[in-house]
Image (tube, rainbow, N blue to C red; front, top):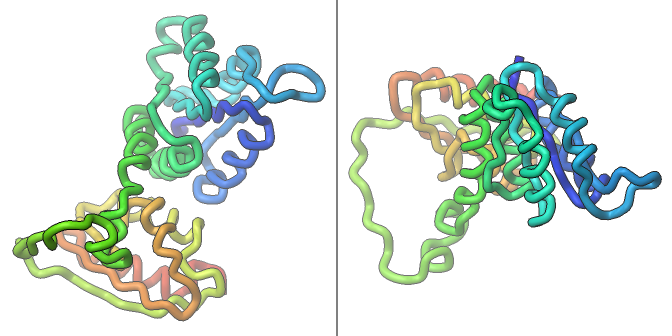
Length: 242
C-alpha cells in the first residue's frame, strides 16, 4: 500500500489534469479528484460530498494527503475532515503546498513508500525548492541573489562524479526526473545533478535538459558510487525510451 492523494480544485478539469500529470511519475499511487461542484454538469466551485467520496477512494490504509488550490477549497477540505472519525482523521494530512508542484512532489514521495507525514512534507518543500538561488549555476548568482558572491564551501570528502549525454528525444522530462528522484531517495548519498538536488523532482524538471545535453552528477556519502552507477545506467538506456 501507499499513501493516497486527493486533489481538491474549483475546476474538475484542473483536478483531473493534476492527477494525470502526477500519475505519469507515480503510477502506483491511488489518487482521486474532487474538482468543481456536485451539479451536473459540474460548475466552478467546491463540493464537500466530492471531497468525502475522494477521500474514501484514495484511502488504502496508509493515509491520504489532500492538496487544494484556492482558499475556499481549503475550507471545504477542512469541513470534510471534521466529519471523519478520530481514527480516520489521524491518517489525513492537509499540507500548505502549491497544488501542482506539491502534488508532483507528494506523488513521487508516496511512490517511494513514504509515510503520510513524509509525503505531506515533500509537498510543502516543493514551494521552498523553487527559489532562484536553487537554480544556480544555470541562473547566475548575480541574477538569482544580487549582492556579494556566495562563499565557497570546502568539500568534506571527494565526490564521485559522472557525466553523460542525454540520448532520448525528450531528454530529462517529467517521467525520467521522477525515476531518478525516487531512486535516489532510497540511497544514503547527497547527489547533485547539474548543480541541483538530485532528489528533488521539481528541480530536476526545472533544468529542462533536452536531447544531446550533458547531465553531470556528483555524489557523496556511503551510497555515492551506487547513485552514480544508477544515474549512468538510466541515462545510457535513455530511461527506457529508446
